[in-house]
Length: 107
Image (cartoon, rainbow, N blue to C red; front, side):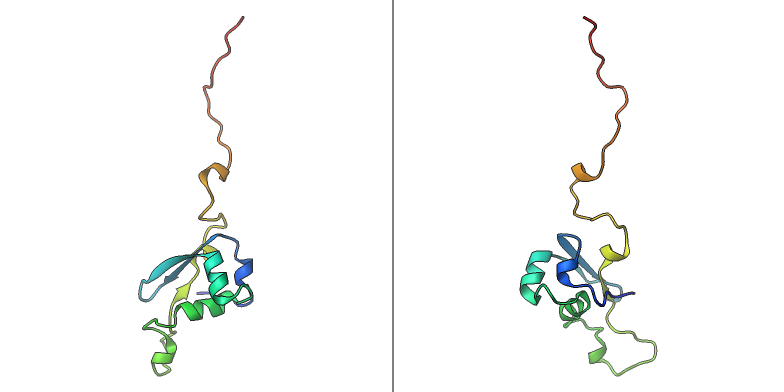
């Protein structure tokens, strides 16, 4: 997985930050403001992920270096997927055309 290196917490585009691990299937979600308060708004997302995964059983620090073991699989799935924010209210998702609207009474 690609991990964001130079993007800061303050630059994260959404209100809710979702994290997942591909190896142990742990996942969670955090409010962006709480993460900025806890780790500092100028902290990189990569460093934030390292701090969040400090207790992960797959962290590379807990094992001898192995050729095929890459360490923890924590990542930000929303950045890798759809560019539409996952916490965008449905009303802001765009307009829909509804056919068969009201007819005006001739008068």
